Length: 256
Ligand SMILES: Nc1ncnc2c1ncn2[C@@H]1O[C@H](COP(=O)(O)OP(=O)(O)OP(=O)(O)O)[C@@H](O)[C@H]1O
Image 1 (cartoon, rainbow, N blue to C red):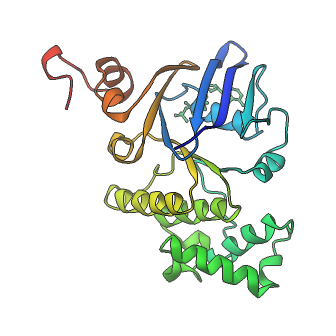
Image 2: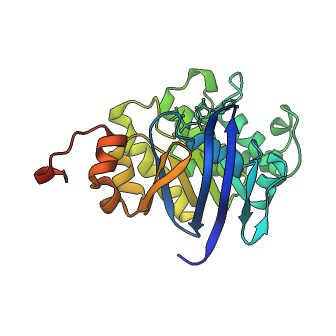
């Protein structure tokens, strides 16, 4: 790990009376996997939206690799090297997984037509190689709307990785994925991202996933970061366990 890659300072954003961001300060370090946890409505998605240009904060600053990105469009931020995936995968459902991946490769080069991936073999080849890294070769020719949730999430993230981000922000990459598949999927994802040296920030509700894959954990609460530290430290904190994880803690057996 080296320097700060994404830096947020004093981010504020209210929707009416709801403070979705109430002074967010966070430095994401190059190379780390940082998990964001917190109850529903705490402002986790809002942070991702602000960092990727989908929402403009009312106050504060955001920089990426030392350069101010606040006020740039989502597309301009992607071009700077910040990728994202959504809670609900954004695949073109009537296209195959391969076509979706090829479309992402083509869009990296500035081509946006849904038919473009069919035109250049080079894009399909790169897309195929990408799917191989994600373990998706076997479903390359399956339509996106026929996938199970685990495959759909991986395919969606593969599209984000096709854009060659330095930082990838993922909103609940395992939500809706069957418990039996979850660990294998995150394992694969973590391997691909580490191999490609992609820094990752992910919103996650499954504490087993957090404990296994995060280098650091940030706890969101009512638009603020209530705690930040290693998984060991954070996941055993009695307040976090009571308020976020929903486990009652008695003094003597706070740590599971
Ligand atoms: N575009 C919007 N317009 C109005 N209110 C919004 C908007 N986006 C978010 N909010 C509100 O801001 C608060 C934070 O929402 P956000 O989606 O960031 O929370 P979250 O921590 O990601 O929750 P979840 O875990 O349920 O996804 C919530 O009260 C939400 O209703």
